[in-house]
Image 1 (cartoon, rainbow, N blue to C red):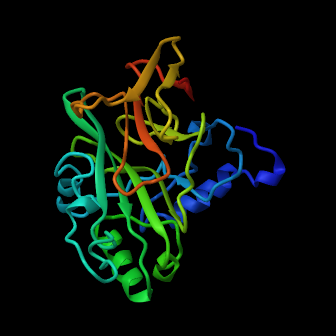
Image 2 (spheres, rainbow, N blue to C red):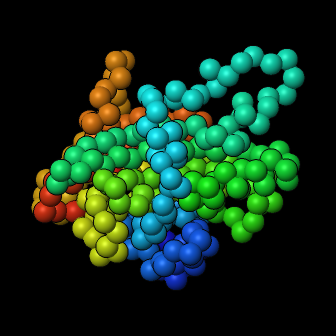
Length: 273
């Protein structure tokens, strides 16, 4: 987890401060930095935050329902009506994010799910204000101090739910341009599959890799491992928890999920093909 000084690596306090800005009226502890994973050739520090110790409740049931309304990319641009002029805010998903479910499963009789939301970039302060309000209604907070900071920037959130417990934001960021990963680049975070204990066990790994990645191997502390591979031409069932999937609206790479067997936790994750 060490990065040289010129990369401005984030300390536990730095990440704790980011998390404190990331949720309203939520008691936040220091994020488990040991659960953050970086890999591959990419070593430049990026402005993304990990919310491994933060619980954000989706307002009502609307947000959760939308997150699982259909197959990955169902809200994609291919369904947007053709327009001769500039795309509207609705077509750009400024107020209603594109949502892709990555995985689901059952643990101790309760269903868990992981999904990613991608919010289009607002073009002006009016659009930014409406987007900021829409995010707050879902219990989300982007990585900016105020609505004006959203102008010209895309936001994404990866979220984990477990039963009826509050949903947990795993990774999120707000950026002018989403970096495209390449080669063996990997950026991910490991969190609890259930609950939000900052001490773990960190059994759920969520992250993104280059579109060229054909396999991500998650190695567990008990010596076992799990390989996530791209879904085939026929979409796999969402309860296949170890898959690499594209995310609608996210051009930087594909996303993956790995789940450790009960009784162990993450040791490392790498792109192996």
